Each structure stands twice: as structure tokens, then as C-alpha cells.
Image (cartoon, rainbow, N blue to C red; front, side, top):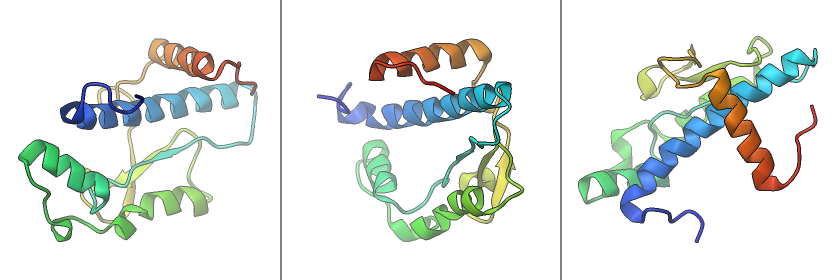
Length: 141
């Protein structure tokens, strides 16, 4: 029963853990691409808080009822960081982009290192190995 570990109350924790894993994996991928001299970019982005189904779920879990979507930026506004990473040639490999303070607006470069994001070389190596183990193959860069 993947995705239900810890029940509904733990779903928000699982969500945050998966987001941290994405950031950690992106940082590890960037390290490996740079070590190989690759021109491929690995960057991360976050929509911040925006009016998605996840927002409704999170507010229900935390407060007992869903908040109104119009109290936060739209899902479309949340896509701005993704669009920046896709289309802006000045975005660099290893970058993290998202709205300032996580609450909408134009994307800003964010720090992808401690203390903002708990990513270090040991954690990156462990996660990389766990991901390879999960798919049963080594990732070739």
C-alpha cells in the first residue's frame, strides 16, 4: 500500500519528505553531472503554497477542513518557477527556484544548502544508493 504509510495524518509529513528527497537527489545529480563535465543541467523548483489539491488536502489534515483556494496564489502562479527553470538560459545547474517566502510572486533563486535545505554529501550518497536500489539498476552519468 505505497503512499499510505502512517495513514492520512502522516500524509503531509510524507509530502515534505518526498520534496526534501527531490532536492537532495537534484543536488546529487548536479554533483555527478559536473564531475563528468556534462552540459546537462539539474535544477529544482517549488511552486510554494498555491491553490492545488495538495493545498486543500494539507489544510484539511492540519485544520479539519479545507481552506479556500482563493486565499493563496493560483496553481498557475505556482508554475512560474517551473517555467523559469525550463525557459531561462541563465538558470544554472544546481539552482533551486521558487517564490520568495513561499507565497507567490516572481520566482527567486533560493539556497539549496544547509541550514535552508538539509542536504550534505553523506545524505546525497545515501539517497542516491537508495534510489538505485529501488529501481534495481545503477544510474549511469
